[in-house]
Every structure is written in structure tokens, then in C-alpha cells.
Amino acid sequence: TLSNRLALIARLVPEGGKLADIGSDHALLPVFLCQQGIAVSAIAGELNPGPFAAAQKQVREAGLEKRIEVRRGDGLAVIEPGEADVVTIAGMGGSLIASILSAGEDKLKETERLILQPNVGEEQVRRWLVEHGWALVDEHILEEDGKIYEVLVAVREGAASVNDRLYGGADSETAFRMGPYLLNKPSPVFVSKWQSELVKLNRIVHQLGESELEAAADKKAAFEKEIADIERVL
Ligand code: SAM
Image 1 (cartoon, rainbow, N blue to C red):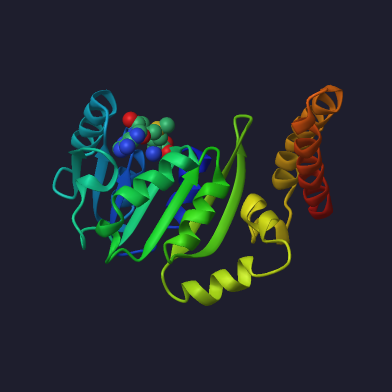
Image 2: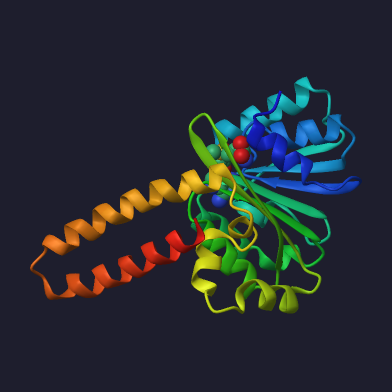
């Protein structure tokens, strides 16, 4: 059975498409989606030998070798344009996700949907999407085993106008940081995530307040603005 995190990602995959799951580890997501008949076929990409072997084993044991191909390689290097309608990248930092997308952007020409689950650095993923012509259409946040995860869904249609609507307002910084959909309907998990961020930020501000360095004052002001921006949402 899937973790709640992977189950949420699975629910966001439309029926009937070809999936590429990059950094698939045990290939749990492609196996589940093919077993359920949601994905027609899938590619599980893995860079590292251990997870690659684990993915192969999982697919073999599920008897899905005909529908799931496990490929070894870095990021999107394992696919060709047109091979994946949906690309999922989950369980990595946002900067790694953004660099995988940048390095393999030409592979995404015919891909319709990205489902991205950064463990940290969500803001970098949102910025990458805007800068590369993708429209964020859905965001989710969940807590599992004491960790909080965000899942971002992007499509190509209407990117310019969607992004203008999401980030064109007065406080685009906050939208990139906290998520334009998430901040409009602050769930308890969202509030608890940002309350613990506030604790960290307040600690930094306190430390900067004690510093004699001149640059500390500017940094302190920037953090205080960030704190005020977050508090306004909560
Ligand atoms: N996607 C699964 C999930 O969300 O449960 C597995 C997440 S696991 C924490 C991250 C996986 O990404 C690891 O198996 C790692 O080997 C793989 N990985 C890291 N960098 C990668 C890259 N550049 N290309 C492909 N896989 C990568």
C-alpha cells in the first residue's frame, strides 16, 4: 500500500496516459498506477544503482515488466520527447527538481502535466514553472509521520494568463513562497507549517538583533518583512 503522500500524487494522475516517474526508487507509484489501470504504461527512472535494482525487483514481482520499463539515468535523460504524457518527480529537494527539469526541458515538449513533490524549496519549483511556461493549476499540502509535504501540479495551457493571475498581484513574493492556492485556503497543516517557519525566522531575527555587524541590520529588516508577510496570511 502507498503512503498518504504517494496516494495523493496518484490521485492527481489523469486516467489513460503514459507516465514517467523520475527518481522512482522502489517504483511504487508506477506499479500502483498501472495496477489500478490509471496509467497505460510507465517509465521508472532512477539514477542510483540500489534504487534502480529495487525498482526492477518491484516491477518484476508485480508482473508488470510489459507495461513498466525501469531505466537507469540522470533525471529526464531516461525519456525521449513524446514518451510521457505525465511526469512525476517526488521526494527530492525543490532545487534538484528544478535542475532536473531544466536539464531535460527538451524532453518535455509533448508532456501535458507535471506533478512535483518537493520536500523543501517549493518556491524554487514555482519560480521554475513560471520561467519555463508552465501554469500551476493545483496545490496540495499534507502531513505524514511528522513531515509536511506539498504537491504541485502544472500544465501548459494558458500559462501566461494563469501565472499573471497567480503572481501578478502586489505580494507575488508571498505567493511564490507560500503557494498561491494554498494561501487562499489555509488548512491546519498549512498553518502549522508556517507557524514553525515563523519560530525559526523569529529566532534568526533575535540573533541578528544581537549582532554588531552593519550588514545584520539590513538582513534583520528583510526577515522582519518576511515575518510580517507570513503573519498576514495566517
Ligand atoms: N519518488 C519516490 C518517492 O517520492 O517516494 C522516491 C523518492 S527518494 C527520496 C529520491 C530518489 O531519487 C532516490 O531513489 C534517488 O536515487 C533518486 N534520484 C536522485 N537524484 C536523481 C536524478 N538526478 N535522477 C534520477 N533519480 C534521482
